Length: 92
Image 1 (cartoon, rainbow, N blue to C red):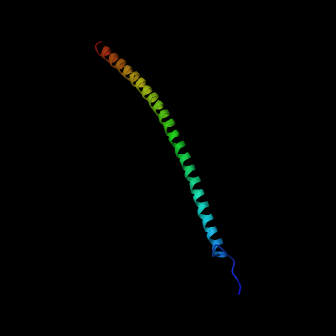
Image 2 (cartoon, rainbow, N blue to C red):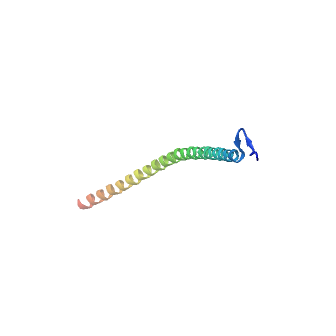
Image 3 (cartoon, one colour):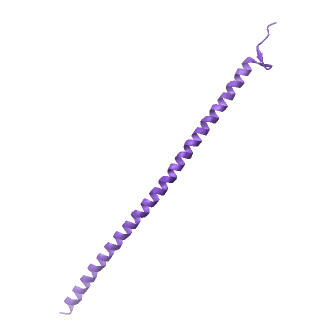
């Protein structure tokens, strides 16, 4: 009779299949861990960008607010000058 090769009582083709399956599982696990680490780095970068842009936006908003206030005061001053001119002209 032909004796089939075995290791630890498991036939060699089954052992090779089991080893291939385990190697596949380990490689998938390693790939997932690497991808999770990449996503964590991207998330940290996004958080930093958000904080950076938030401060930029706040500064831009304050600058625009000040410009609008200045322009509004100038418009009100000109309206007052027009009213004074019209009042003085009407009393002549």
